[in-house]
Length: 148
Image 1 (tube, rainbow, N blue to C red):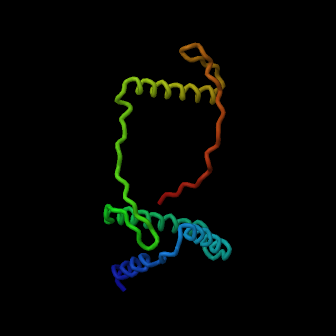
Image 2 (cartoon, helix red, strand yellow):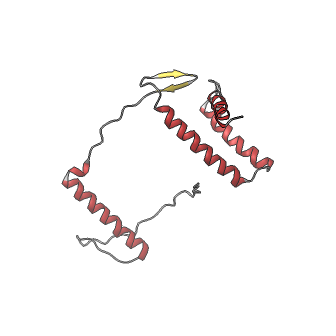
Image 3 (cartoon, rainbow, N blue to C red):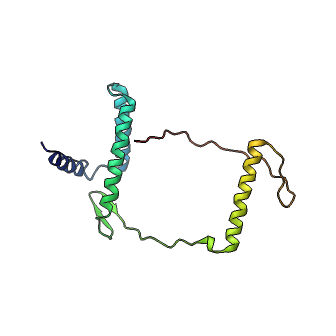
């Protein structure tokens, strides 16, 4: 079987993988159950499985981005999914305002001062003579970075 024929068959299979009754909730549950099955059976190495999920996610994300380019610019419902185009909007360039730019710069300076006090415990005073406090902190959620 040629590579092109194989990919054509796979594309057709993916295009018809789920019927219109398959909900977002069911999609999430299917993913969770897939991982549970893999872990319960123990037949596949966890890292190998995750590596292939990362690759598959890139395939799906790039196919999604490419397919969006070919959809019409009109609201449409098909196969239990609603497609709603959203037009881009204006984004104000706040930095064009010198007062805004100055305040933003001062805010960045304050952030740096807060970091110094937090990391060193030093007593630092701002230009108005007010002591810069040592602020509290929160933890970022732990994660795993995957590159290939």
